[in-house]
Image (cartoon, rainbow, N blue to C red):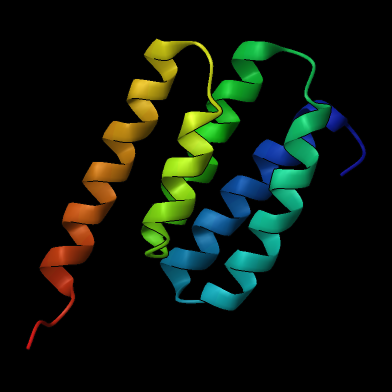
Length: 101
């Protein structure tokens, strides 16, 4: 993907699909690429929304610590809050599906 404004969002969406398909290692590799590419996005709103997708995908994988770290870097505050909401939602989903002793 050559267009820098769309590379990171596309990669984040691909990683989300990989998690859904159960390819966690593939998703981690794709998210790493997305996290590098997100810094090239010029539009602040577009960048923030991409970071929300990255944080949500991290939470889907069970990487809540990483998701929170990603969310902390999101500006404006309103979008950061939506990232935290996505993290909470994904964490709740995982807690229902993860077997506990």
